[in-house]
Length: 146
Image 1 (cartoon, one colour):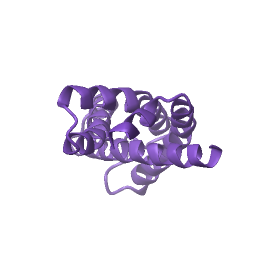
Image 2 (tube, helix red, strand yellow):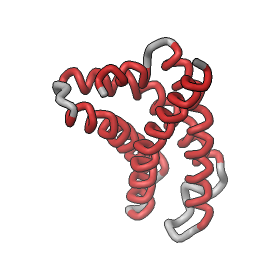
Image 3 (tube, rainbow, N blue to C red):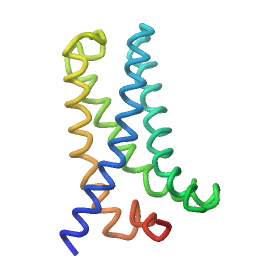
Image 4 (tube, one colour):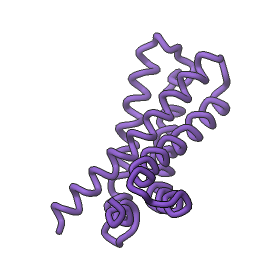
């Protein structure tokens, strides 16, 4: 079960990272392009990360015939803790790197900081997903519907 659990946790974390990365990149790019402050940029990036994270879970459920209410419940149950951990780590790293949030979109500091923050968020969320799945929670609840 260990190898299967690790594989499923890895897959769940990649899935979560994809939604978070889309939201984070879009939010921070928009916030930076609009000259928003750190707080507004982080709020936008976080909201978009949750939106895209949930959307990536909802799409196949809805396409598979799961009702909207059930699909939304499954998305919230499977993704909320993982996305929350990723967002905390990602945004903390971006804030901790001097100049990362103030760097422009053409600045390598911005993009390298964002890449590092997402990589560290993945590392932090993987054990969370593994723990959830091992207890029949998280992405484990989705497999009955695929």
